[in-house]
Image (cartoon, rainbow, N blue to C red):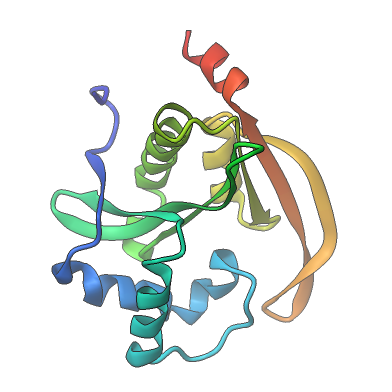
Length: 177
């Protein structure tokens, strides 16, 4: 149940009507570096659809971030370890959804899903150091900085640090009391 001040965010499976918005997000070169380790490059619809097919069977958990029936982004847990009980979190929002609290709400929901439904012990992430909005959203969800990979990413003509953050289930549970 969400609070009165919390945005109306739902996490759900991808549907056919989401594909145009999700492809547009995946192909957005302006935010490419914030969403993954691969260098920026044009992404055709056919290439994107092939990636979607491959991802369907990889065991990762992916949700569409839904606001009032519209897909505004994706969030998921990936590269999980069943023995050590951890996974990495990743999120991407369409430009018009950024800065409105949707990302923070989605992060809180997927963290709860990971700890309560997937029995994870730890969730971690990597973020580009200049992405202040993302770092604030992760800190708001309880993630703490665990380290930094100095000048690890090439972003728009310069090297940037990657900030490593993590959240333990015990920390998350303590904060909920």
